[in-house]
Length: 463
View 1 (cartoon, rainbow, N blue to C red):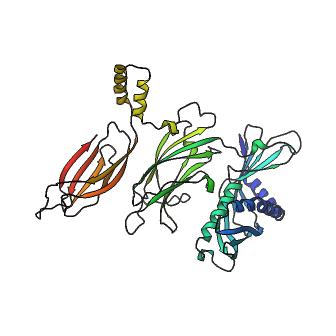
View 2: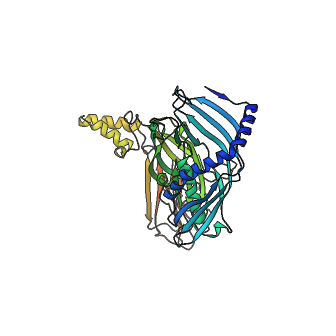
View 3: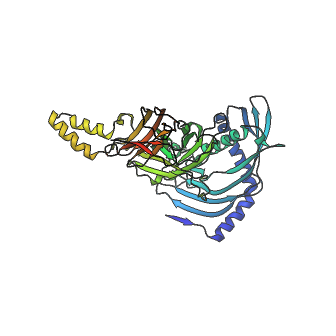
């Protein structure tokens, strides 16, 4: 149950906030400095020797409330959500020093915020002011830019990204929901209001397909970065798949979840550029509230350029994930298919279950029946080594052979390079295929001569 403020009430509230803003600014500026500065130090990049505030004030422009709602949470508390819009004129200067001893005053500029500021008054008590503590948190992220006082920070390689990432991590880790700050009002133990894990998200990064090629020579070298909270120690990175626009990772990651109703998993796919900064190929998000606890969700997600601006119609490829959310307390209610001891294929489990305590004929009969029921999933790795004594395909008595490999059901396809003028070609190339149904799919190999008509020399199918 909740209530909302009228336009007249919002106007009055904004007028009153403007009047008291100088006092709020002074108190909030000191609170932010003492809260965020230790976290800045914690996430300080290695290229810096120190990172501190030399000046912090929120300026003279007060935020404006665009909406206020009161929500009774049914647990002895009241939640107030303040929809705010703030294009302020703060004065924030960071004093940084590099490992080389260079000191740089860096100004944080163009701070903007449009989102929700959440206040939780809990627990409710009979003693004035009727609540024991207040918790506060941001529901959205801040936008800002950086500028060296008297210069351009982008002219110093690596510094801009390092400082920007540090500030964002510090804000995320200190005040962005589900993180919250608890301020005791009355004496008491309020540890139950602190942020606590509520479950585990199991993620299998399977593959991606049709990625954008960013390389002039060859193909992109994709890898994926996954996170629920973009903190340094909570971000997971996959291996790099070289020269491939349809990479198969088949990697497993785990994430701690604090609030499944508001958090989401973010996946960003990059092209590895070696010593240079990696280039973003595309990103995607899945909301945790869309997952059914205890049930694996298999999803293909379209990659976009920007998660905030949904006006990207360019095809940037897709990423394939398997997701499982396990709330604490449900661990023993079902079998976790991502657990290390659950590494057998479906066929192996079927054979094993039929072999437990049965005689030979019963085992064979049971296994045969279960072979019809199970679907074997996994990755098929195929190495095309060479061919010998191929028939001549042109008037010169030679051929320009290459092989096309594809799965019949999924229609996944790969092909080798062309070996010119050879009847005994050597390829030594390896290809990976995600197999969705290993009992009923087929790998087909077609040997072609590379000419105008792409003549088929030979055809082979493997179950």
